[in-house]
Image (cartoon, rainbow, N blue to C red):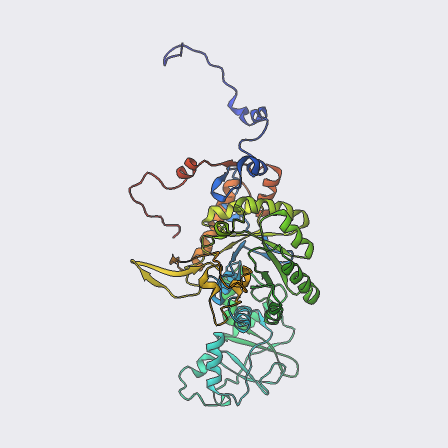
Length: 534
């Protein structure tokens, strides 16, 4: 007989104060370990939507969560975010702003060597501490020359030296104010340049130089040696940017923004790489849909032999331990993981080759960690939750294409369709990309898919459009804050803590049925507005 309300029934319960102790009665913590979830023999291959991370214990605010991560053997970023080397995602503006916000942009290579090298150069020159190779002019150059530099590089504070070169006697400086209302572009600079200069002496520290800039209220601080020769330059605008972007990714040696760029694995890519390194490149991405090839092994060995530690190599793409082992043995400094998981990629459909991204990231990261090689999860990232999951599965960074396409900083013009403001977004395996440019046979996109010699091009991607997302200067901070709150819910203060918790089984997971995925999204409403951040 079931006891009814009001019956005088004595029920014995355990002491609530001892609840934590009684957890030991269970053979294992609630949920599943990562290894149990990722057992392909039971669950098959999993995507990010196929599982959830169970919550942990919170004893710290989300603002204290550190997102610092080692993305290659030698480079640590303040945020684990990278933009994809796609011609509708990353060029100069994206690379600059990704670096300012603590990540790194990977400039695509679906154009000429000169164009790509110039973009790398602009990123490296955009924000410096001491500008060690400033553009200089002579007194006999003209106002037109200054305007041309402004058009090309985006700045106009130009030191004037005797021979127009560094380590020549400093004579003056021409700023935007000097020529703003000057109508005659043929006027020689000796007639308009400012000669009353405040300078710093060679050997001054960055902190001391910044203090001089503050007190002098000048826009530029030339640094000169004992002979009055220009040796470097400091810009007030860079000082202001330092205050605005405290997480900016910078090279510890030059204080310049970190820049990455993609190349292929063909002989002419060796020439491309030399130009990129001369421009200041920090990270080279060997861009291939299937990285387990003789071409990539040979290129890794060539780069290591020729340039040693001048540039870090990210090899890939891979989705298996066997692929990863080949590239690790060749000398890769990081691995890029993903094959056919991007929103514009149809490789799995057309080629019947690839792997679900969650399983791919976990298995490759698990293997690569034994050798101290970071992995980058590339593809399939649709929201903040996917970023958290990719990092929990062992990735050191996430590479985003579709998530950043449509932002102000991505290449291309906005257009309107059915009342929506859109930007074009295409896969590098799309026919649009493979046929782009004057050299339609053998451009970077076709080489990426080993298709440059094909008479009939087989598409492995599509072209489409994405909705305007606004500037990444708002979108990336949203991703950062969302990721911090995700780690807080899990109970991890750092990404290292997160990965260690997964490795030891402390961080637990749960598989999701199709019904559970529906339940976890917006449902049961006639209409709604989904605002992601304010």
